[in-house]
Length: 368
Picture 1 (cartoon, rainbow, N blue to C red):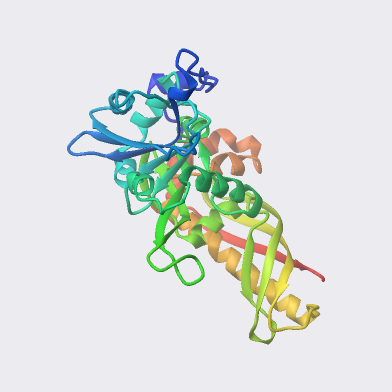
Picture 2 (cartoon, one colour):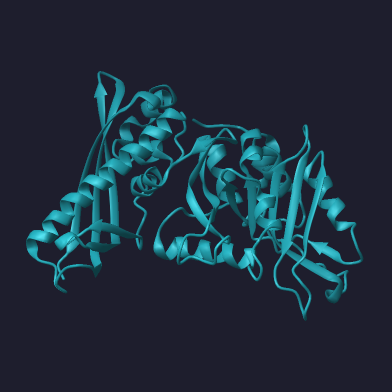
């Protein structure tokens, strides 16, 4: 599963990702871009869109777009417009349109590795079913896309859900593992209670599965949850289950630990046994007494075990269909049988798509 994408990407891992500030330019003539969008252009060209954050005084945020044969040329074109100096060293979020991701991320990652301003610590997102420019050019009035993306990134850490991936981490994954996961974004029309009629909300939409630098497809929300559980992640996430008296119970994940055991037929790996210990506590009860009864608690544990098991199976099914070990599963499995690591590495690419899976989830709901 080890990959060599291009030599320059290997060298990029040595970079610090720090960018020099534009000291040679007047501060009041410098526009700090915070979000970069990359889309497939006409033919073999690429379209790059950049948006600034809040600007001093009453100045509106600046959004620029350019199309060229390369990302470097498009960025240079944007820098030649107007009298302001456009600085990309503050870019913290990079959005990739679905069509561009299908063509491959290597040009973008190579540009980020070489560019003296862009940082490898910038977070990558894939825009599902649309172009990145749609989000940058059509943001609702008063909406700050940089602030919204930053909030989504923070919330992913605190509340669970698809985590942003830094460009440096994506590079490392592709080099070491041949695959990686990037969070997907989707712009949906707001429902009642989310905004005025006709407005849109920006939401996470599972993960984009990248193999050999190319988008293979997206997970749904169930498989995204399963991918987190397989990596012992998800702490802080709120799950809503049918509760007592036909109400609902909100459960907060407080701990996840997933382990693996291998199944061999002779010297050939044929399957995996996955054991997930999932700890939760009741965050809110609806349609029931304030205290969760023992019978109701056991029923919730059974339902939670079932749903979590289905999520893990859904994630593995998609990874196997894409032939992409996007979560370093080989490394996790090898921890269980370190004396067979060499054998696993030799067989993994061939056997991974056909591995059988046995999943057991031990879910607990803390007593209130």
